[in-house]
Image (cartoon, rainbow, N blue to C red; front, side, top):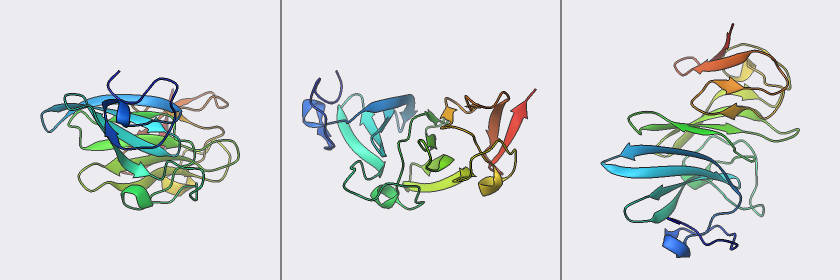
Length: 173
């Protein structure tokens, strides 16, 4: 165990077992500034663990049901997520891509710039569908699962990837 305590859910930044995670789901790892870093989606937030120091910190999101949950682009803990699941990190460790949305909420691909903790939406909206388009005009049918994007939408047959420069999902034939 490098972060958290088995059987003790929570939302606390800290070292080793003083840090708490709640319902971790997606995981990605990268070398960030010379340190192996693990990124985890956990209950309306994105957290990171620096492996050598076992320090758990919040990158973005609120991490609490008591705080407004949703899809708000902002900086760090001012950003809002709705059950983020999939996560991928660029090879240089500079950006994260997070899939966000559950049930009838927003279904979006979000980007986090790690240097500033700025969260922005690349693709998707609150509209349900299967539209290959740019940015908010793109639609997904279910909560998308982003593992390095490609994007897999379990109710739509094509597998897509998101062009990072444009935010456009492109179906893979």
